[in-house]
Image (cartoon, rainbow, N blue to C red; front, side, top):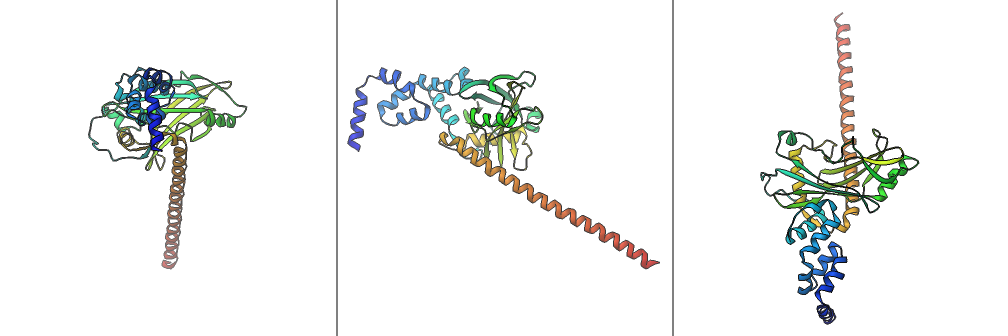
Length: 316
């Protein structure tokens, strides 16, 4: 096997590097290109080309087209953004300044790009740090047109979104030079939005006892438009984290242990379902405690009434 591998490597080395770069490496996706770079020192040198990774980054995430980066930054960015979270890490320096959060978001429907935007959020204001985090990409007064066809029933549209909609939301820490995709790539759920009357798709990444939730809401009777694309960080009990605590969660994702991004959809769906099951169990437990408390309250009230009535009768 070692001799065969050596023979293949020698054969590849005889091919002119311009042919490999122009006709082979440019056709590979990120994970395959990274694997090729590990095959030999010759291929590693060719696969480390700045233009290759820069073009790959822009084609994978069009919203990053305006970013300027060096060769090392492009490869590092791709590694951060493509990989999926395995285990969140304790934030190494929670007091380190994090003055700005950059969100690079791309939304596709059946492979066609329908929304690509970059939003910069100032994180140092008292309002941001104390208020529940919510980052919006779309002005509800200016919805984004899409090629999505509305189904006869809203449930049909929901099923269509689950199958055809994909989204990436890359959160970037420009100071620490780290990034992470907070999306599950495909929706973890799709249901009717009772306010807009349209469909609502949710993408999510579970981080311990909280979940980064990205919501896409559609509207329109005949032509479907996107009227909301927003990010929040939710606790298990359903409340939202403020900006200060949300930044800690985002940094724990960026600095956490990563796994193969090809598992993103399956892992995100599984973790979301486990998260929702724990939420239901927590809600049921809380309801049982409240029910016991209510019963005890009523019992104490009845006992008090009977005692007063008995005392009144006895005193007469």
